[in-house]
Image (cartoon, rainbow, N blue to C red; front, top):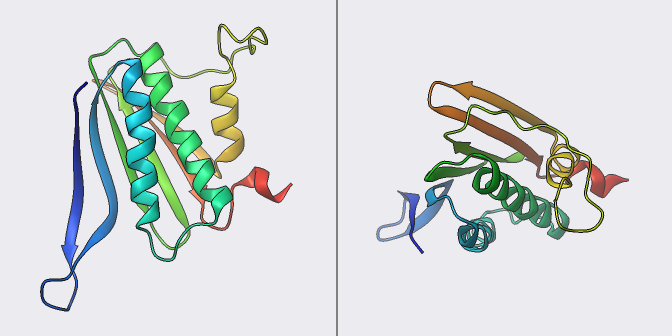
Length: 155
């Protein structure tokens, strides 16, 4: 299993103090075994944020990361995909890029548990906004999760 991680780091004012910047960039081999490490690395990134996220918001971000990376692995057919997380005081932004020009679409969920179909609608429900951008080399999907809680947590 291969995945590359680059945390963008910045120095604080005190000498020798290094803090994680609110940006995480990953380039992942596109196969199913990479989803778990992507979730774990995203969780580690989220744990380092100040102020810390509420549990519901943290869980929503990790679930969206999992679903978007899974979709890239299952449906894009490429060798690599990218994951980028950014955080600001209001939100956490998840961007997943892959080499497929095929845009995500809702599917009828398979209640037998074999065929999926739950992920895209879940991403759209949890995120404050979702955008898909077609590019010459594929697409990027960007989901924004509010730091004040995912939309479903208020219901």
